[in-house]
Image 1: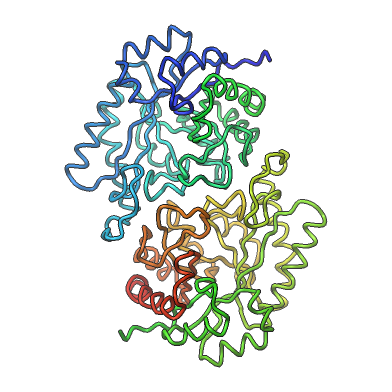
Image 2: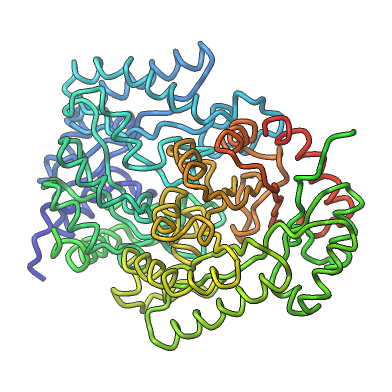
Length: 294
Length: 294
């Protein structure tokens, strides 16, 4: 068990019920090299203290989750989104997270996570083409702010089953198209196996992302069935489902990515487990299914 | 209410608990022009009688569901798939259905609909690239059979949430790539709003499908949330969810499609409703949300 886990990162959402200190302790004890943080943890502890908790344990911050939710079509909604994302960029800089993950939001009537359908929604609320165009507009607003803070906006394509209510970016190729107008150091993309494993264009899109210098992160977790009652929480540990990790990991490595590999699992059973055991499992699965192919 | 419903077709799966005669009666009473049939109905009634039930009511058969499940990797599984699909082609010809819809199957360990995950599956069972290549091989086996019977194999891309367990064709563009080696009259595609509405490449793929003469059907139903416990049965009546029917219908019309528009809804609540009421609702929703844009 002497696998090098220095590139293995525990996204703290995987141990949702642990405090930041507990999550960091679990990751360090499992021999991992980094953690992915969430804004509420940084806000609660304060950026300086959060950064110190991580560095004192000998770990790095692989990314900060998350900004985004950019699809509002009304003036107040747009202003609120810009304000919140400016704060997210400042928090990322303060905590030493170069990569700030963006989940861009769903159709506007439903862009608040967990909100249900709106039978009374007007035609404009169903115009996914227009919602995607607004994402492009908001990125143009925010990219200069990110560049000023030396933070990269990292676009995360979400599985198409979340296109209505959570993210209108549905493929890696689409994320790259949206990133294209901006410098690669300012707007990147993350490859999350859960969201993109099914994409027939995936190999080509990963290669393109590498050529364009935009791969800002590689996140791993597995597609398991049946879907949970809340599909958002259907993810499984690497190796428990259908994702072909050797192949996708080889594509990511061939594209030149040499950064951290974050495990981010939303799953009630995983959340109920002991964080130390979860971190150990994350390390073992990384060593078995991912590391040999990087 | 003098809308022309002659292009509106009721796929009989929408009134799952009705007999073929009841489904046809409901469609005719609602003023629709066609029905989409399923193989078990044709097998039960016999092709000749099934065709007569439809034509006696003044309706057409818009399509037959379904062949496919082509991803088996072992010799016996491949032989069984070829045999079953040869029968499906013969049944389509016998019942006068020119268009035979194919759902191509998921990863091989799980290609039987409704089957759960296989934690013990080997690496080959997770190789979606290879599974897709086997679909191409089986199409090459079956295309000549279809051509001999003047039946068109109609590839149906399914929503990516079904890629593991039901269909490794996940986008319209991918379906067109798989169809490309064959004459347009032998292998076509169907545009089902439920499965493709989220696709950022949809407008271009529909235009391409039109240019290539491959649009063999247009199916409509809505994406509603939350997903049902069985996600397959999450579909809603046109207008009840998030799909932008005016826009997609315009794209399909602009691509030159002038055939039937089938409503195919898998939904426990819809199945529990009176078939006559369901057929009437199908007609009304078609007239309101689709027909003005065709």
